[in-house]
Image 1 (cartoon, rainbow, N blue to C red):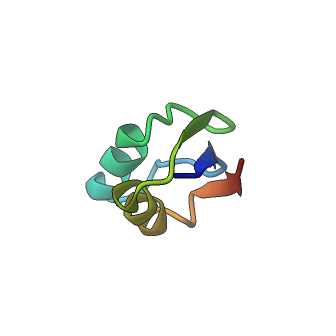
Image 2 (cartoon, rainbow, N blue to C red):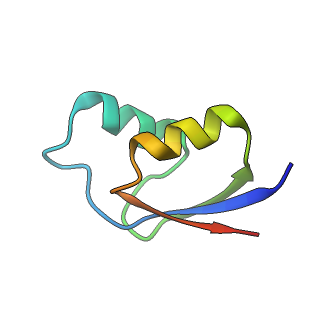
Length: 59
């Protein structure tokens, strides 16, 4: 599997609780925080749900 780098670019303030928990589950803690994780189907689905809050790069 390929790895992807996910960076939070927008705040979770005024977002639904579901989106907040998805960001937390991805391992993101604050704006400009990045994580590198394997691109499994579950992770890709999570990223799609919050794609307006994150930036994605393939590694």
